[in-house]
Image (cartoon, rainbow, N blue to C red):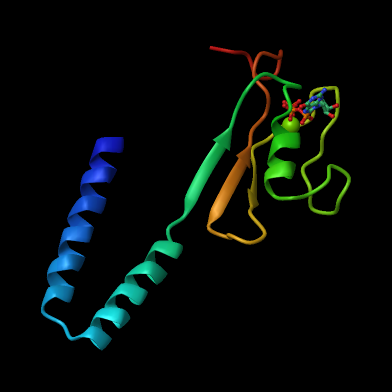
Length: 112
Ligand SMILES: Nc1nc2c(ncn2[C@@H]2O[C@H](COP(=O)(O)OP(=O)(O)OP(=O)(O)O)[C@@H](O)[C@H]2O)c(=O)[nH]1
Ligand SMILES: [Mg+2]
């Protein structure tokens, strides 16, 4: 799967190279800027998984630059806390999403 996405990026860059090779300098700038803008729109979803109480929600908050008590932060506690998947966007990079998942290895969410 990783190889597939790498191949796609390589193909994309090759295509971009071909396109700009026939363009004047100003059109090249526009083409490259448009390409980079498109890249910024790609959504990145990151799932945070692990045992219950291992610090997943704390990590998600830290990644977003939020303290654990701050408004909009994921709830944390010493007892089993996160009971359903919750998605949090990065404040600066809205397309980067972190999924705070329930902990595994509890009676509610048994490890496979
Ligand atoms: N010492 C220490 N404690 C931590 C660390 N990260 C989190 N904690 C504490 O561990 C406890 C559990 O943290 P959570 O972030 O709620 O853990 P979780 O993995 O989201 O837990 P569940 O939602 O129940 O699966 C809290 O009391 C945190 O303050 C760490 O790096 N070091
Ligand atoms: Mg949690």
